[in-house]
Image (tube, rainbow, N blue to C red):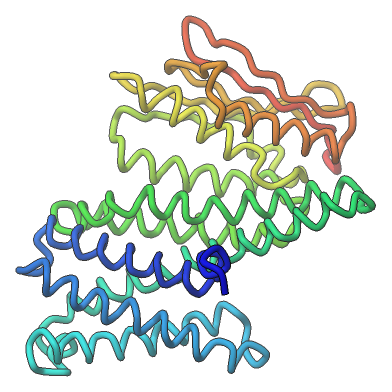
Length: 343
C-alpha cells in the first residue's frame, strides 16, 4: 500500500482527527480550568476518544444492518465513553470508578464531546461519500442536472454541521463556568440546528417555516456569542410558512451577512429578514447595515453562485437572486421564487 493510499484511508483520517480532537479538548479544558493538569486531561481525553473510535471501528460494522446509523453511533458513544472513563480513571487516579463516583462533571463533559466528535466524524464521512458521488456524476455526464444539484445540496448540508460545531465549540467551553445559562441555550440552539439539518438532508424541498427554524437557531447561536453587536428582525415570514423552497436557501445569505457584514464592524449591526408577495412571486430578502460584501471574497461569491445554480435548476428563469448595496452601508440579497399553494 502506497503512502498516498494510506493517507486516503478513512480509518487513518479518522485516527488523525481523533488525535487532533483529543489534544484540542485537553488544551481547552486546561485553559478553562476543568481539571488540574494538562497531561491528566490529555490522558483521559485519549482514553475516551480512542475508546469511542475503537468501538465505532470494530462494532458499527457488526450492527450496521440491524439498527439505524444514528442508533448505532449512539450505542458506540455510550460503550466507548464508559470504557474510556474506566480506563482514564484507572490510569490517572488508580480507581476505575473514580469519574462515576467522585467526578461526575467529567462524565458530562465526556458525553458532550463524545457526541460532538461523533457528529463531526459522521458528517465528514458523509462529505467524503457525497464527493465520490459528485465525481461519478461528473464523469458519466448522462444524469440529469437536477440530480447533480441535489447531490451538491446534500454536500453543502453535510459540511454545515462540522462548520457550526467547530465555530461554537470554544464558545460553549468558555461559557460552561462563567455563564452556564448561556452555554445551555447555545447547546439547545445547536441541537435544533443539527436536528433540522439532518432531516433536511433527505429532502429536495422544505417549507419556509423549516428554513426559518435553521436561520433562527443560527442567529441565536451567533447572538449569544456576539451579544448586543448582533441584532435581527424577521418580518412577514409567517404568512408564507407553508411555501415550498429548496433547503439552505436563506441560511447561507444570513451567514454571509453575519461573517462579512456584522462581525467585522466595530459596532456590529442589524440583519432584517423579510418575505413579501410580488404578483405571483415570493420575495425573500436578507439585508444588513454592516460593512457589506467584497467582490473579491471567493467564499461569498461561491455561495451566491451555488444558490443561483440551484434556483435555475429547479425553477429555470422564474427564480432569481439579486445582490445590491444597502444604504448607507451594508448589502441586500433578494431571492424571487414562484408562489406555490398559497391563496
